[in-house]
Amino acid sequence: MLYSISWYGSCVPNNQSGGIAGGIEICITFPTEYVKTQLQLDEKANPPKYRGIGDCVKQTVQSHGVKGLYRGLSSLLYGSIPKSAVRFGVFEFLSNQARDESGRLDSTRGLLCGLGAGVMEAMLVVCPMETIKVKFIHDQTSANPKYRGFYHGVREIVRAQGLRGTYQGLTATVLKQGSNQAIRFYVMTSLKNWYKGDDPNKSINPVVTGAFGAIAGAASVFGNTPLDVIKTRMQGLEAHKYKSTLDCAVKILRHEGLAAFYKGTVPRLGRVCLDVAIVFIIYEEVVKVLNRVWKTE
Image (cartoon, rainbow, N blue to C red; front, side):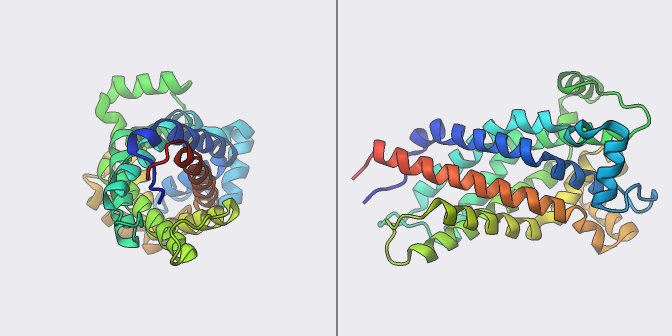
């Protein structure tokens, strides 16, 4: 019986591959992330600046050119490798402890392992990375943008607000990432167990893995977009308007209604499905290779 490789064995080459895959995916799909963030920041009470996805793209390109759709890309790109390393490293470590005698990980334990991985990546990597990204995107819509680039922007944020300025919306980020990975790994584990049936060693085609990953990504989008909206508002340049995560949620509900909690769902759906599909394909294929190299009986 082949067990999943150890945490130490998987953490370095496995998650570097996941980080590279994530970096490629981000470069391709970041405009959808940009549009999603702008729509989530666009408050109904202000009044709204954008009439929808197409209008957001049109206004951005007219004002800043196509490169404007990539504002904030650097923060996600720089954070993709450590984020993937933490996510899959923690999940691999926890799942190795949670497997039964046959090496099988059931859906409930997969959910809990995913939750642990999501909480850890949120605290160590995602919150500062997302805060910087949102501030950069929000800054572009202001009358006088003040951030000239990644390093200048980070320096200005830290100078004005200290390190805590890169950790805005931590509670919302932990809730979002924890639920994100719990849903994704739960769905992925359930689908893999269903596909393998009574044979835990059954091989899964990369195309099937990608399809399962896309389904898992879609489930996470529909399951936690409200938390993503709250997180985005808590990390924007007007975050001072909210006293807490709960206060932010209450104000959105009171002034904008339930529909506001699903702003940016369509562009987020496109990016996340592709993201999760690519990363899980790379992850599973590298695990197969490493299991052959570091075989344990």
